Image 1: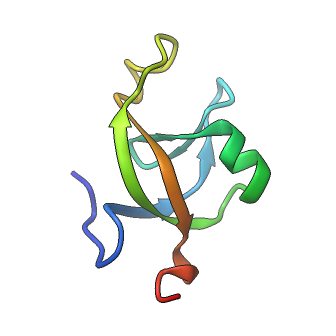
Image 2: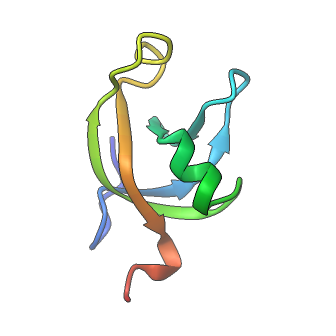
Length: 76
């Protein structure tokens, strides 16, 4: 169940699984976005969720986030 926050749908820490997928809680994160702008351990707020379009990871992560930001930037 998502942890509701004022500005985002879910808040948590960026982690990486054994397959190289970035995730936050039960949600897959966009790989290119994490590589470009974030690092492991960053606390983020997820803004949007979509159905995971990847056949490789959809079973483990049914939902994917394309829009998320550092939790410390929530009030900006």
